Amino acid sequence: MKILWAPWRMKYIKEVDKAKKDECIFCKSIMENRDRENLVLYRGKFNFIILNKYPYNNGHLMIAPYKHTGKVEDLTREELCELMELIVKSVQVLGSEYNPNGWNIGANIGRAAGAGIEDHIHFHVVPRWIGDTSFMTVIGDTKVIPELPEETYEKLIKYFK
Image (cartoon, rainbow, N blue to C red; front, side, top):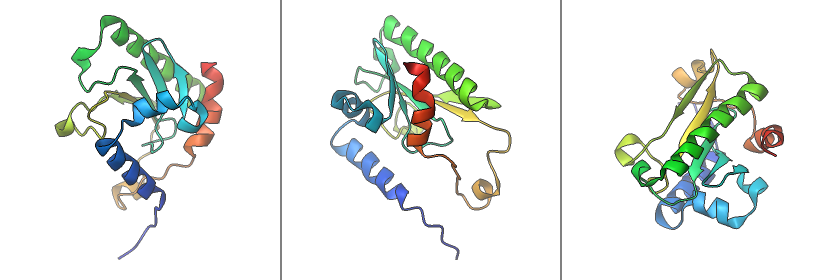
């Protein structure tokens, strides 16, 4: 048996587990007002953009409403419109900085759909490149991400000021 050590995953496991039990990581990130530390890139009127601390790919952003809800139907027209505008803004920014070949954009709503954070709806914007699924992903069930989220934050923040 081959072992690939990934000790940073334990932090993710603990954070997601804590978020499910105690607190919402989205609400906490916004209330703390420590945007750089929490990787919050932009605060809109109804929604905000935050980098995923445990991304599927470089530049993996999440757009979430300030409103704590797990249901898209709980959002007002204004909240939904701004949410979509921020998804478009995210695509433009990531396109300028990383020039990906494609995108995964969507939301996992509810446990059955794979939502890691069920009680606070959020949309993912994930840049994709041809060949970004390598043998490591297919054979080793391991994703290689070459850039730390903090480095990604430094590259992207200039677009949101």
